[in-house]
Image (tube, rainbow, N blue to C red; front, side, top):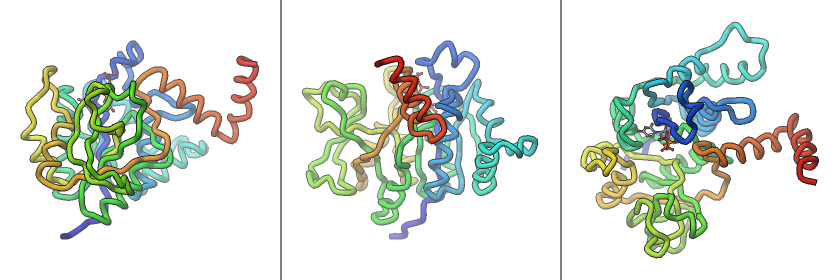
Amino acid sequence: MLVKTVTKAVIPAAGLGTRFLPITKSMPKEMIPVVHKPVIHYVVEEAYLSGIKDILIITGKGKRAIEDYFDLDKNASGNEMIHSLDEILGRINIYYTRQKGVRGLGDAIGHAGAFAGGDPFAVLLGDTITIPPCTMALGSIYEKHGKSVIAVEKVPRDMIQNYGIVATSDDTRKDAFVIDDLIEKPVPEHAPSDLAILGSYLLTPEIFDCLREVTPDRKGEIQLTDALRILARKETVLGHVFNGRRLDIGNKIDWLKANIELALADPELGPHVEEFIRRLCP
Ligand code: UTP
């Protein structure tokens, strides 16, 4: 078995962001700021810190601001944040392709076949931040076992129906465990576990054949979970329990929480924000 080093990542960012209307009428959800930079900036940083060299961002209608953002900006060389972004941009390649119609996460990933070119690749959602970077852990597991890896996290029972849930008979739940099946949004009584797919993946190129086999759901969308289900029947798919923090920026309350958490963690802003919160909630 030839196991390659993971140097490619796909960032799907073509979704409509309807939960952020009216903001997303004129700006991509992935460009919404969290404290002082757009969420997709954190995602690209995570990929870079995980050893990724080539990134494909899947864009679509109304998403051109993302491409502008990742241009090198020679005119603002005095700005420290632009300087650190430009340093990253100097070390990685970012490519773009447009999803032809918003037809689900699986369909978006299906646009990455030529980019992957037979190599394994990481998937990081354009609206999700993980602390510490989850992709790094997935890359190490892939490089050890040569199998696709899906990051999961334990969720409370009443949240189970909002997620894709994995089934496993491997109760050791070590660093990497074998996934037997995946079930999209089960009712808690019928859920095979409390381990929810969190949106970070390390995929082998076999996923593209599986995506072609998926039948669109009732909304006409191709779901990545359905393709992963097919993949898990054909070959070993591993799960990894991520014990860090996942900040999903795709809905308003979690976006607000992410702003507060990351502002509190910022050495410059943190003390001011803490004092402000204490004043608001004495
Ligand atoms: P979401 O389902 O959270 O994003 O997809 P959404 O569809 O934009 O959100 P709402 O429900 O309308 O508010 C997770 C990630 O997958 C991308 C999104 O851009 C987001 O980063 N995505 C989703 C695509 O690239 N294409 C799709 O067809 C769907």
